[in-house]
Structure formats: C-alpha cells, structure tokens
Length: 100
Image 1: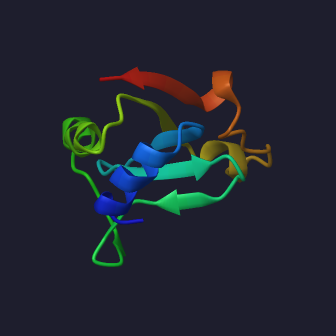
Image 2: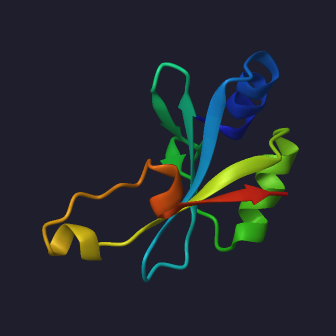
Image 3: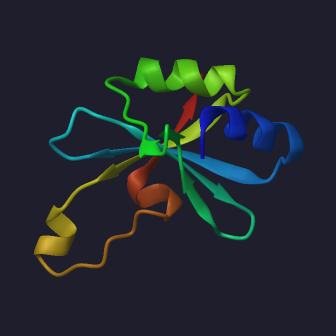
C-alpha cells in the first residue's frame, strides 16, 4: 500500500490497526496496516517495502497520512529458536502503544 493509498484508506475507514514493526538486532522499521477483515498491507514506495531508519521518520509519514496512534511490534527470534509459539498479535506480550 502506497502512502497516498494509506491516506485515502484512513479518510474512508475507522476500524483498522497500524503496526510499526522492527526486528531484534535491526535498526529499521516497517509499517503494516491490518484492516477489519484481517488483511495485512505493508506500506510500500514504488512497489517496494518502505523502510524507516528511525521511529521519528515513521511518525512523520504516519502523521501526514492522518494517523496518530499505532503499535510498536518487536519481533524477537528467541521464541521461535527455543520452540515457543510467537505471540506478536497479543496486546500485552509484544506490542507497545504509540501516540504521536
């Protein structure tokens, strides 16, 4: 989903979730939108995943799209390595609310 498409989506819908995703050991962030049907859309630029070098960069583009709340999700490979199920979508185990 391109940034202009995200702006249109936000203007027309109100039931969705925005996630700012990072991986342990990485210094880049990606933005994902999950709509009411459970479809996930990564934020893209010219059909390639959009990567942000800092949370401030992600905040700036999300603010331009009219979004002021999101969840920070950090993927930690430790759970998969030791055989535990990863719980990235459960609110209290891996997500931190962001307000900007």
